[in-house]
Length: 288
Image 1 (spheres, rainbow, N blue to C red):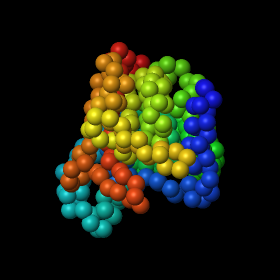
Image 2: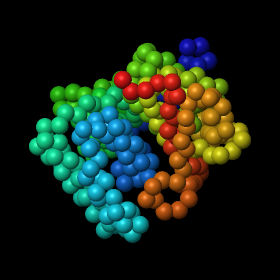
Image 3: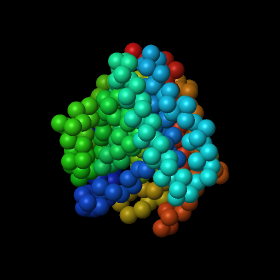
Image 4: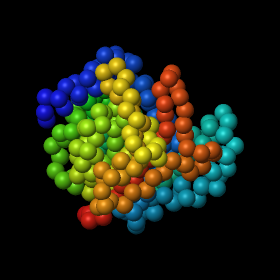
């Protein structure tokens, strides 16, 4: 990594390390009933199901879809609490069925770049997916990784690994994970970092790259916005697709299933949000 690149990542690292571990523990913590986490869990569950067709992994969820959809459409405090109870019940029913039938589930491997203090691993735990994942979480902040190791100790979560690292120089081999996730990272990078960061992310994904953006729009050019010692950019879909090139199939999701209204957009404390998920599938790779 060049001196310039190292300086850019040191600035980004500083923006997280300046906070206490207590603050980082709950900062941008994910709720399974929010649009992006709920959709991401469904994508991961579908991948597990496809890799383990003998288990009918999503049977309970599929049977409950009409009820889940109805509760989402009547969104209020009571339906929200009902959904949480129903999701816990579905996880219990699925696990009991799998154990009773003695069905073997082959876990999938997943790399979570920008894992924070276990933000998405908590969601996977809420969704009952964590026993079926060989999970590796990477974050630039040592404090975030320390939190992860406290919240998810190895003796209780043997399939979860957490380590510090940055997206520009991860030493994993090509196609070494079934799924790679990048969550709320690219918008914080200087624009000249993006080609290499995207290349590294796609390089390590055997079958699927999931990118959860917090500020991405269908605009011709990136909108660069420097904020203190890092960036809060709005990324251009056109430029992202150009960087990915023709070797990938890309699905863009900006209106999430069950959620009312158009694309999720807001301005909070002067910071713009425009949430999008991209599912990037390499054309020349497959599951092993």
